[in-house]
Amino acid sequence: MDSGPPTPTEQPILPKVAIIGSGVSGLAALWALTHDPSKRTHEVHLFEAADYLGGHTHTVTYKHGSEIIAVDTGFI
Image (tube, rainbow, N blue to C red):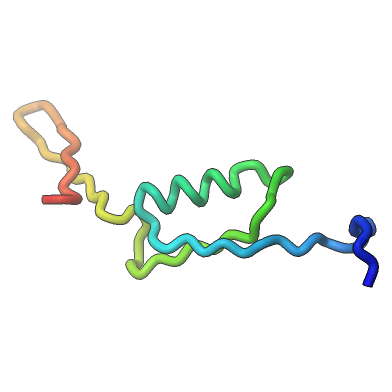
């Protein structure tokens, strides 16, 4: 087995990373590992149990008179 650099037709084998949960930390990790495809160093997979991303985040709008206020109810 040759341990030299990969030939142009070979793709390097990237380490696999599993990100568990799509809360703020999981999404930040996903972004940090994938935002620049030219510098991809890992094969990244995001796993989320819910049918939406964002973890505990849940923002609702509340109308108070003529003012509309965004309220985060994720931890309430």
